[in-house]
Image 1 (tube, rainbow, N blue to C red):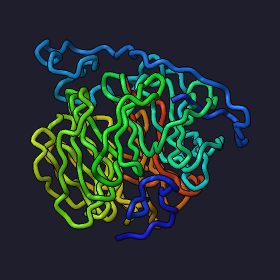
Image 2 (image 1 turned 180 degrees about the horizontal axis):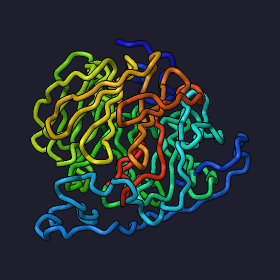
Image 3 (image 1 turned 90 degrees about the vertical axis):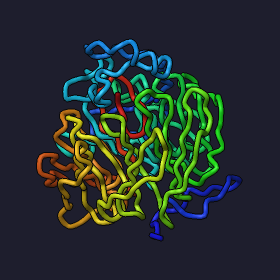
Image 4 (image 1 turned 135 degrees about the vertical axis):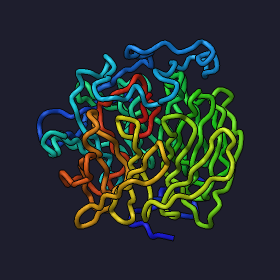
Length: 407
């Protein structure tokens, strides 16, 4: 088992884990000074439907089978059809382009201008920020202060910091496809918690019956989602509308540590990164049968589809590389190594699809990688323990959460 240079997400009075683990809103201001956020301004947000981009008609028979209230897909054969370059929702089209980097050990968010590769602002947030998550309505960025038991809202339009909202153990955050609920991955509390997306009040908490719930993705119809359990090497299948556990399975490898979860554009295949399996688990989500293993590189961690829905970028944190998978064939077609090494972790793809941004988890830096050939464009120094960075804004009609899963 690998050692972790950072403290455990353990806290007094909570369920302990046997292994140390690895909106409302602030976009970057244009200055380079540090923002102390001494007097945060309250920010309000409503989770209102976002006007979708023009879309081809979807057959009634297909829309009738969706989770009620979920926007119909632009293309039933491509879940990422709304994520093409330039397809910004009206609500985000005037937001300044920024990269938001939560530094878990510095308790800050570094804000990078992607045109200059420079940190232009440092925002103080709560204790151990893990991810920066776009809200379902795209108006807010939520900083998940895991050990601080709060969500700090950042406004990507104005750069203002809102009043933190009390939320227990917010290691990661997702939103149901209908926009009704926020789903908190309460890793240490061993719960998947459904909260009202407007108020963050608890609606229902599901005991995970596994250790270290952390990442997820939703089925094409929105009716279920699959969750990885990092510390017990398990996967969960959860009913979205009923808010109940449907199934659980153990990954078929001793010591497995599943991480990020992503579904293929056609909705047929699920990929689960596993840092101890040094690759991906490939799964049929509908049958939830035994997954198969695909090696990509040491410490496989983050998963990011390309803007054309053709490729999946896989960050191999343990060896400083990025593997590229072809969705059509399920085969690996390239591997890009960071010169001098590094620890590529979580991140996202630029709005135009030309740059893959990844945090350097153990190196206090961020990597900007050219997606045409994988060469390194820049290393940007940030705080200590950079983790779930968010590139924002991005194309898409609504957000399913994490560092930016858009439909």
